[in-house]
Length: 319
Image (cartoon, rainbow, N blue to C red; front, side):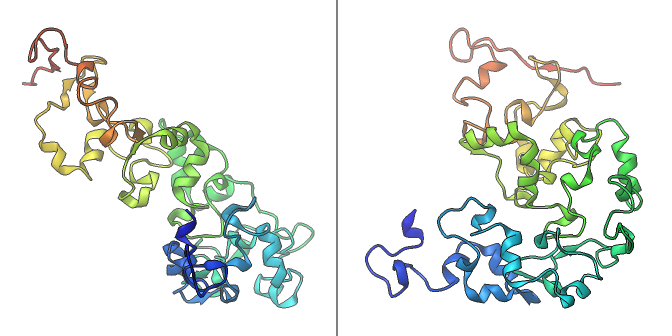
């Protein structure tokens, strides 16, 4: 979409750009524009977005012009005494700057990401402070994490625990600072889909996807990331969970609920009997063509219109 950035006929800007300086980039990247209003702003921003990003394509994440570590070291020497002092004498040679610092702007001093770990400035809580092993973790993860987060150890030992969470906490979380709540290491949706490849492929191929309005599309809007008694790590039972956002749909006349059994499975009829939770090829994330194919999964189509139907089984009322 060339015309999103370039004027088709003439422009006072070089290369026919539609806007000057960073204004063009920030007209789409609202989240970056918000960070640039924070307490600290990276001085490199004044040099222009193109000092770090390629506007068209790159082999690096976020269209960087070089690996992030190389870009940081163009201006920041990790061996500099002032920089080492600011990091309590720990070696910076192998550290990834962006694991702690936001490269654009932050509400925290020193460009520390907006949600630092509670022990962020007490490095010796997790790292050895001196000797030959300076900087090394005092314990391996997840044992080190469980020293403070014992409730997660308990949860992960229960049935219904997230298999991916039983390994290394750092697969999903950053130990230092993040812009996402819960110290999630990157955009939460991207982190989840990085492991849940079938869901990602289904979303990419779907014509209708579950709206991203709820919690900005975070998976944790519907799923518990560590453990739950509900299937598929759902945060609540299906009907209760859907009703949180779709309250008016609970008034529909189609029978639904724990006392109505799906004739195909014998399980309670729920929203997911007709809708896909992530994405489908049909409008309103329906599982099939709503003009007929979806309905005849339960209702017998033989005979004239309004003919014999398979009525949903209803559990007898409890006395």
